[in-house]
Structure formats: structure tokens, C-alpha cells
Length: 533
Image 1: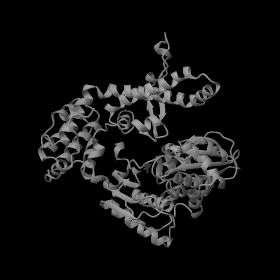
Image 2: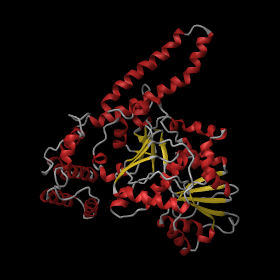
Image 3: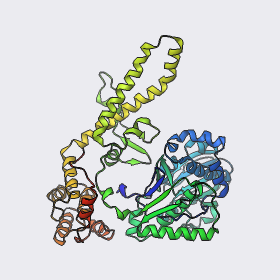
Image 4: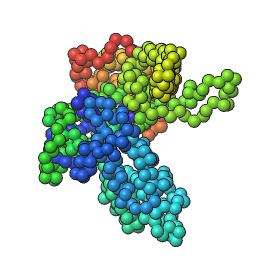
């Protein structure tokens, strides 16, 4: 589920690794993934850099200016593109387009002679008269097969002048290069390099590795690749923002990352970092330290948008009906059919104000904002002199943007309210609250039983079973057997794989293993009285 995707949140001068099991020790080391001159350029922030940062003002609104990290990544990207002299076409691994969009818009690519962009897919490459074809891909063997097919299908006579390049994100893979060699196309690449997109700045207080399978890889497959990327990302962060003086952490994966960072320091010779530290403390937590948070339904405004519609790379796609302009006599066939796509980040003043509020509190904020905007527009009647009219006109674009923002979030709130006022949502939330309050967590839950019988989405059912297991510190054998039997009766046998995986990862297990959760929840209350929605 998307909640298990790795994210690193930095706020009030502290970085919290809340899902990736990463750790750091305050090593004075420059990261090998970003060259020294790139770090120097990013940190000095010359005028050209400053102008480019105007498109990412939301990254500088927190306690830490994350534009420095973003600019370091942009410099690396520009340098690679400039190595490929001449016109270019980029063939994208579709998964990477979203994260790269947060680093560099098309305007930057166009400045460096990128004329075409295509999605990586089997078959022949689309026709294009460019000198360079650059593949931006993750190190996945199945993608190497597609790339090899693309290259073999190229018309050698027509495109004999064309050069191929490949950029692995976030790092090169010997296995992938061997696969390309076995397929007979490795020699076709003029450049084979890596782009270490380890930490992606999403907002002024949020960095993400966008490693959605990290939890599964670490706890089910025992694959430490993402831990390596976390260590690289943290050393990059220290190279740009100074060595973090105080490190706190908990978890086995955090220890692994710390050991990797020690090894990286030794390999690089331990160059001293003279940058004054920006962060006071680095707090590192393994995801399994707190399995409850990603299992429970999010109840903030932003959280509910993510629960219902899903937020991907700060973008959300919404039903278009609520956003269609109201015109008298407009028929249903004239309504838009394409989803409404909105960018959600702190650059939008209203969204920054309501994103972390409980959904119940959003309505009053929107109402208050509507009155303020209405009063501001009414101010045009009070403008008498030329100076007053000029001042009003100068403020008009900002006022219109605020009104459009208000209209969008009012529509979103209406969409969310339709969900949160439904009986199904309330019943689900009530069961979650009962589990977190320790009510009947050791018994078969009738609501879960009904959900299984009605063939509700499997992820909804497993999420509730996992929540009950965590809150009860394990399930009794008869309860666990009942859930497994009922789920298998209404689903295909492949569900066994999911159940076994969840068992291995510690989300569902036989118990209870003691009253630890109940004691903890009594000492540190984790849920307020009522549903809060």
C-alpha cells in the first residue's frame, strides 16, 4: 500500500526517517554520488541558480532551504545532457517521469536540446530526426529486454548517425549491463552512466526516496538495496547541509545504514566538511517501529485526498464534474470527461494552511477565506484615486489566483465529504477506533467478516486484519485461522501468497505476544475519543 512507501520528513531542524529504515552517524564526508564542484555550485547559489529557483519557492518555505538539494540534482542532470552533443530524444521509464518532474521541468530539458520525449515500450522507437537517443531507466532486467528490442529495430541505414546513451536511476547495475551484453546491444551505448536520484524534494519539509516497495524488499526479500540508497542520500544531505551533530535511531535497518555510511567514509578518505550544520538532530526509525500509522485511515485534509484519490508526486487526479464551470442550460454531455489534475504543495497558500488540519476543521477555514476574498474584491468600489485603482489592479492577479484556489479546494472538500459522510466510511473508521482503544481485539470481528463476505477490496480487508493484529500484539490461532479460511473461500488461491508475505513481514502474526501495545497506548494515548470525522 502507498503508506508503506519510504519517506523522510524534515521539520523544525530535524529529519525523521519514518518509513525507510535508515540511519546516519555524523560523518564529515562528501558524498561520492555528487561531485565536489556540483556541491560547491549548489551551495554558493550564484545569480543564475537563484533565477531558476523561482519555480520552486515552496522548497524554501521551511526551516531548511531544500532548493540547494534540488539545484545540485539539476546541475548533475544538465552536465549529463551536455555530454550528449546535438539534438536529443529521451525515452522514459514511465515510473521516473513523476519524480523527475519535481527536479526539472521540460523547459530545462529544452534548453539542453531535448526535442522529443517518448515512453519506453516494446517494439520500435517512434520516428524522430535527432542525433542522440537517451534512455532514462531504473536498473530492471525486464526494461533491458525492451531497450534491446528498441535498438535492434532501429533502421541502421536511415539512422546511422545516431548515438545511444543510457542513464540508470538511481545507480548502474552490473546485472543490467550484462543482460544488455548478452542481448548484443551493450556496445551500442556511447555513454552508460548513473543519476543518483536518492532523495527527491517534494515540499519545504518533505523529502522522499519514492521507493514504494522498500518495506517489502527489506522485511520480506531481505534486500538491502534501498538501505544503500538511503545511506547515499543521507551522505549527500550532509555534504550539502553540513554534518549532523546528533544522531538518534531505532531499528536493525537503521544500524545497517549506519554501517554503510561508515564504509563510505572510509572508502572516500573522510574529507572534512566545513559547512555549518543546518540540522541539529537526525532521527531515524525503522518502519516496523510503528506499523500502526500506515494501517489506520488518515483523517487530515491531505491524508483523505490521498486515501480516496491517491497523491502521486504531489499531483492528484480528481473527477472533473465538480470542477466544470456552472453554465445555465448546460447539458450533461457537455461536461468534461478528462480527470482534473492538480498540483498540491505549499506554494499554494490555502493548501499550506489546510493540508494538516483534521477534515472537520477545513470547512470553517474555507468559509473564512471566502469572506476575506469577497471583501478584497469589494474593495474595488472604494478605489477612488488613480493611485488606489493602480494598487487594486496590481493586486488583482494574486486575488484571482486565491479565488481559483478557493474554488478548487471547495470542490475537493465536497468530494471528500461525500465519502466521509457515507455509512461504509463511518463503519470502517469505528472499527479502527475500537481496535486502537483495545476493544475486542482478541476476537473475530464481525465487520471484517462482513467485508470478506461482500468481497470488499482485499487491501481494505488485509489492512483491518493487520491493524487488529498490531493492536492486539498478535492474533489468537483460532482468529487467524478463521480470517485465512474466510478470505481463501471468496478469493483465488494466489491470496495465500499475500497472507504468507504479511506474516513474514510481521503485519499479521500469531499471538498475542503480551500486553505491550495496550500498556503503551494507555501511557501514550494514540487516538482521541470519537472518530474525529
